[in-house]
Image (cartoon, rainbow over all chains, first blue to last red; front, side):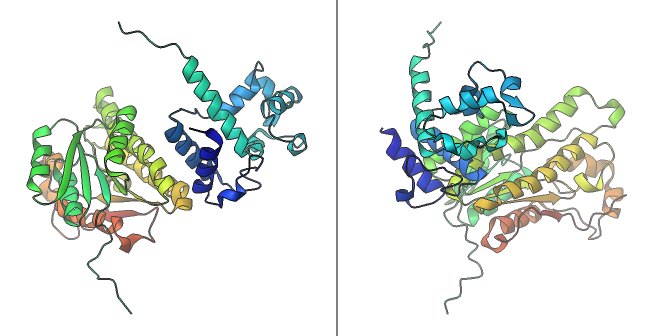
Length: 136
Length: 254
């Protein structure tokens, strides 16, 4: 299944909004008006449509890379090293959208349609690469 | 102007899950919702014979019985997925499954504490967490939790039971806040002393004392509770959420 068209369809259905507004670069919160419950709905629909599991906090955990949680999150604010990791991980988000300072709680404001597409592709690759357990 | 029929509760063809639906209050809820036109899936933990009897007794009604231990979160998710795969939807969840293990606090053992909290409180969490994503996506649904008068009025020997039902009350209010943006209502029904197997010991041990605390001077019937659940499930309660509806004949605190 092609990822982007399905993700756009899911986002349009979940918010709801016109599918024409769901562009790859659209921020779900700032451009499309998504609320926190909408994120829950989108993740649920993505998991069912693509048969992947997306654990809570997955994006931030992956964005951190080799930084520890304490090195990334300094009293609720993303550290400078954390911002570097985050910008590289969320390469689809224009750099000018990253505020300074950036609160950890505000990271979801950066997410775009393309962010979710990349998330699904990563999960699909991780699933495909996972070793298959052999029967006893 | 076409007026909707007062007897059209808006439940026809809806899909309902009722946990602990093989006996007592649960059975009465299952039968009433099925009679109102719902497709009802009841869960039972051990009593397969009683559950099959409920399903078979509803001639012409849509009642299905499936085993489930609500303490098992993964099993709850799988149970709900099975219902949604078959029926494409879930409109109503009634968290009725509950157990009672009464004893004074100083002699309650770990098992009596654990099984009551895990069945009554965690089971309610598990099932609500399993249905919520479906209801959120559908922008529609109702969750009704069966609490107890014990949650607010207390009861000798019921610290574990009352604590579990008090947790359900808090859970009900918080979940109502959380799911309101998607039009999902969450309420609780708090029965008083009802004529069921679960309350038999209390009723036999302290019949006069129990009746003296009830303004309407009678023990409640399972159908009394079922009527309240039916109401909260119906379109007549579409503007009610976060409420605890006491069905207790006017039960007084000692």
